Length: 349
Image 1 (cartoon, helix red, strand yellow):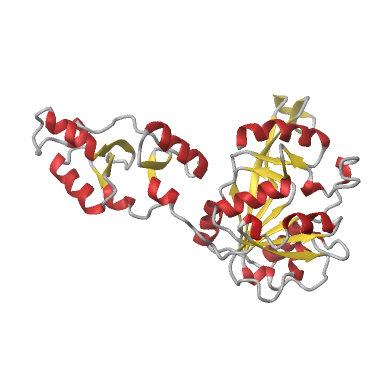
Image 2 (cartoon, rainbow, N blue to C red; image 1 turned 30 degrees about the vertical axis):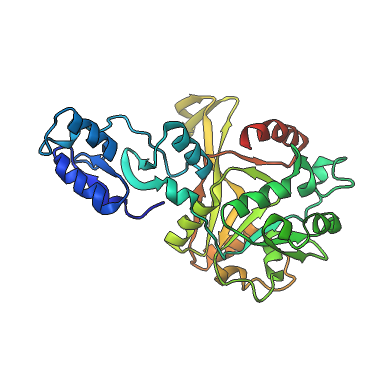
């Protein structure tokens, strides 16, 4: 996301000449028109101005006469794949990013096409037994089960590589040879893969204690190897870097409807009744960003799960924050999930 967007804000009563100066000075070929409440009301491109001048509007005319009143906009959760698609469909070079109608950023085609590279380590947890997916996992580790024509682990790896993350660590335990022989050192996937083998299962948090000492001291993205998702990992990392907590946890909203009428009372007296209320919770999505101060201090060979590790950080007064995700996410833990993934993948690739 470009950081120049604040320089291209303009008000509806500014002139075409003033808009032209902004467009020329900032080289984005666009100005964003906002009202007194800082909400986006339109977008002006150099093409809009040319059409206005051809219609005999003077340079002193106010910009609202030529602006596009119904521009394409996105939220901060829109993935880069979706952004590329929108820009191609509408033939545009920039898209404003809004929250509650207020501009919070600007995505550009040149920014999306830029070759990005992150040194941050990515840790994919691929050592589980996948017992709930038997008999499929009797002779195949769960991350190597194919969704469509690729193993789950390969889909994840490709997502990270496409986003610019090449420094990949994969934890193994159950049938590790199938994973290591398939991916090798990662060169064929344009990545560098380091395998972390657990002789005995250490839990998601404990596996961090096996990372080599030369693991880059940068925030580490961690993900369960059985997750199918369209989470934008670059935006997740940007979010973590912005707040610099001990860890960031991706969370999903989970709704549960109580199948009965709920009665609220005070002693024998009924105060109110609510028919089949829906309870909403945030649940762990199995995706984290962990600061080096945390993952480099996990004791070697200590068995601990990530939630427990993060609870310890919170108990010490450290900051652990949540990153709500509303994009596609599926934990492939049961046969129903596996079958659903086979259908969903057709719309994700």
